[in-house]
Length: 202
Image 1 (cartoon, rainbow, N blue to C red):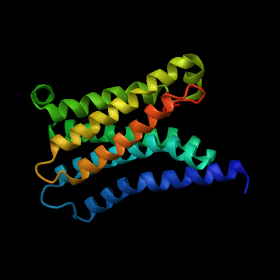
Image 2: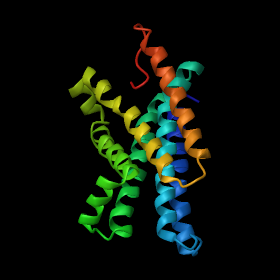
Image 3: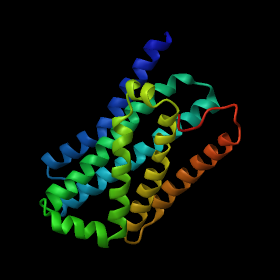
Image 4: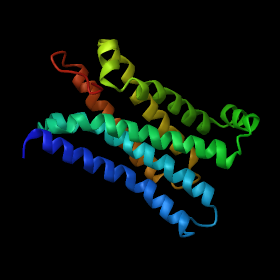
């Protein structure tokens, strides 16, 4: 199998795996299996999915460099866009379904609740990254594109913080997410000390 077909196959697999959580939520909704608080359940699952996909996106370059499997490189863009899609849906679900577009209460939440402020800031940071993810923007921004897209680490860190602050008692999964992010950041710092190699955020 040539490289083009392998990449197409991997991209197809990414689409299937990334769409699966959304399809699963829709199926649970239609079959009345979302529990007593369906709105909160959907909100949490959308947020969890976006964070997981963000962490997977950040792991692509380290895995590629460790294994030498360059076929993984084209997967970063669709993974990043899926993470942004789920995070945007997460925010819209909160704003439209949970809060009924009551902007005064939304603004109050963002200002007074640190975990909502962290999540909202992470979403805002990802907007320019999603917009500039095309080849055209890469050509326009040149080296500045890499600098801009390093914000993904900050946004993911805020997402982890949002996750940790949001949970009431069970911090197991937030700590797992924190550990994964710290490991990825250490790899990035290690690579940054090697000027002959490209950044992990490329």
